[in-house]
Each structure stands twice: as C-alpha cells, then as structure tokens.
Image (cartoon, rainbow, N blue to C red; front, side, top):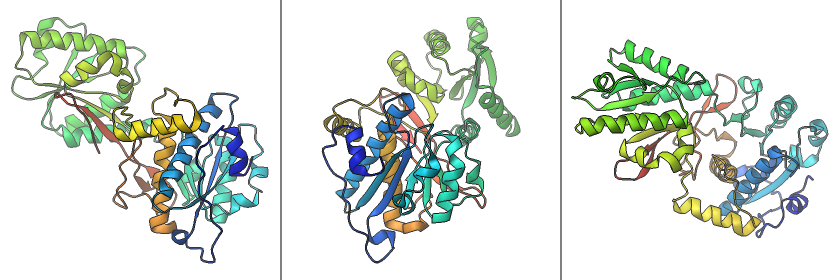
Length: 380
C-alpha cells in the first residue's frame, strides 16, 4: 500500500481528494506541491493501527484545509506495521522523493529511517513516544513527544514564572503509587533557592492544622503530590470545608495533565478554585474549530473520533498543518521555532528548539486555566 489511492481503500470513504500536481522544474518546495510521506502502522489489526489510522485521517483533513489556502500536497502512505520490512519499504522510489515523512511508531524502525532521511535530505517528524537517540546527531529530525523529565522541568519553570507571588501549600495525599515526587521535590528546591516560603500539610491533618498551612495575606497555590482523581476529590472536600470557616481565603490549584481527564467529576471545583493545569495539549470540545473538525471527520469517515486524550485525528491535523504550512512559507529552512508564523492549534501546540548539532525537540507547554467566571483559557 504505497500510493494514496490504494490507501484510500483501506481507510474507507474519504469524500474529498488531496490535490496532486506534477513536479515542476524548480525544486523550491515553496513553488510546488509538498511531497508528504506517512510511515506508520495503518491497519485495523490492533490498537496501534487504529490510532494511527485516525492520526493519518487528521493529516488528510489538514491537507484539505491547506488546499483551500493554495497549498498543494502530494501524499503517499506506507503501512509500516511492527513486523514490516522497513528496508524494503524505503526502496520505494516515491519514498526518496518525499520532502517530509511522519513516522515511525516503533523504535526498531528508527535507525533505518534516520539514515534514509539524512541521505535524501528529508525532514522526519516523529509524532509519538519512541526511543530516538538519532535525534542527537541527525539535523533532519523533529521529535514532538516530550519526556516526562522535560515536562516536569518545564512545569516547574512555568510555575515560577507565573506564580512567584503566591504562597505555595503542598498537600501530602498519602498515595504510595504517586509519580509526582520529581515535580514536588524539584519545585520545593527551586522555592528554597529563591527564599520563597511554603507550607506542607496532609489530607489526614486535623482541620486546625490544615487551616494553619494557608496564608491569610497572600493568594495560596495548592499543589498535591498525586495526580489521581480520588485523592483530588478528597482534597477538594477538605478545601471546601476550610473556606466555609475562612471565606476570605484566596485559593488556586496547580495540577497535572491527568486532571484534564477528570472534568466530568471535578469541573465545578476546577472553576471554583481557579485551577491551572500544565499540559502539552488541550482538547476543548466547545471551540468552533474542534466542533467543525469533529463534524468533518464524521462526514468523511462515517465514524466518530476515538474518545482518547489527546484526540489522534486532531493531533494529526495540528502536526500536518504546522509543518506543511511552515515548509510552504520557508522551504527547507523551516525549523519550527517560536514566531516563524502564527498558527492557533486546535489541540496540540508546537515549538521547537535545536538539540546541539542534532535535530529539533518540541518544547511547547500550555497552562490550561479554569477561571472563576467559568471560562477555560490556555496560557502559552
């Protein structure tokens, strides 16, 4: 399945065709169709394949949207399943003609594809979590996924940038399974080095001891040491009891990406306590852009997007729109740096920094803010 028309049959009906135009004499990517390759497991055999089919459909929708702005795309897709012969796939003449390739999903395919894109001067976008040490030496690679360590460091930086005037209150939630120690301990070290006082309390503390942890003269920022929903619910109950007795207290919450999955249970308290959640994405089903793309997806593919966070189709849309628009404007000098062009992402913002003499790493992080007047805003 190397040609778009053949893959068209795999993913069922697609109600519009992506423009393809013949290669012109100039090889300036800004003056011709952008040649796109997708090397991902595109099948219905297991979860990997189904998720990547949805991601690929998002790419196709981005290509259709870009067509309306005058950007033409020539797209080819290869089903690079886990047991695929990647070397045989890379022998396809259309692969070497690509300007940009999205993939792979499996680490074991990474070395062959890295060598291939470096040899043929092709940009490689790695969308998801795989081991890709080649990024440290191959300047053609863009890695979108950020490691938990990078996200933790960026979250600490965002806290210190935005909330240095708050009084931090750390609540021990007695969760022995928690993986949030790197964040809470790292933040406390930074607070100590800046001479910022903070208090530590516990969900099991008495009402009096719990109350003493909160400042009466400054805004308080509550930080839990777990991302789990049950403990979050107990914390909200404890804080709600506190403000019944001390209604003048100003309290905000600084949370974790997992909290975005808990809106059905905790949304009212997110609003009530002015909650900030660091995340590399934000799926907001209420925006016009999201609703339009979800409806378009249903029309074109006769199914709804999978109920995953983030949505894979919206991820594919944002990735393709960002890179193809960038290549069209800047050619092969496009490096995804902040400020190269303004693209308001539907769900997944991107901003890249070069790693030494190697490739480029996504460094984008949002603060999703649930305001007390029942709005949701994103702070970049």
